[in-house]
Image (cartoon, helix red, strand yellow):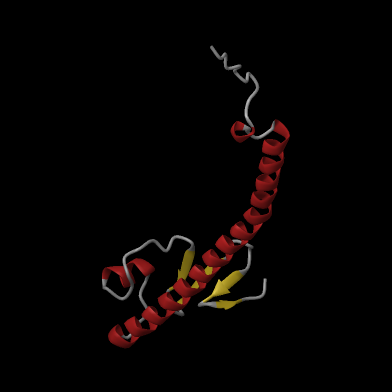
Length: 121
């Protein structure tokens, strides 16, 4: 009879990662995430500012068309939406000057815009 001696040690193909290796990988991933987050935040702010400028230009253009149709500027943005000159969405960050037909807003960085162009503070 032959006795087969069992190898009690683990074979090399079942080896896992050491704690140091796992910590190193997590540190690298964390560093990469921390480097990307400010870029994402800046892109979101720029996107928001661009949307504001677009809305200001669109509102002012709609107000001019309204004036051509009715002979006067609308009293509010809501009238432009109700009468179909603007799409139905919220324009809460925008002020409308009914006397001059000009839209005004403030960007996330505090810059004031009027009808899509930057004003000096």
